[in-house]
Length: 96
Image (cartoon, rainbow, N blue to C red):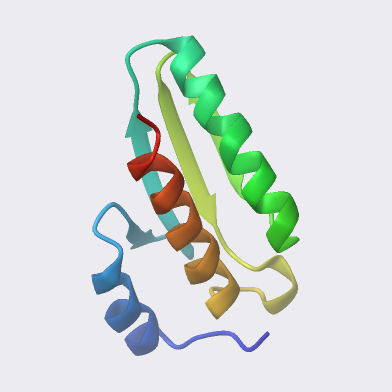
């Protein structure tokens, strides 16, 4: 995949309200009621990542999940990152 320019990234990120662009990554933090709910969301997201063949840098602390996306092979942000971010958004919206 082709690395996107900063202008392309800034334009595309407008469609992802829970994401920002920082330090070369698409970044989002989600907060849940407790650890179990957070871990359940991570599990749902993990299945999406496997289907996409694209995996985030992520961490969680109790009820917070930090996700960072970049395409390592392209050394930057690609459409693949935006596609996965949109799928993660869908997982979070449908978590109820």
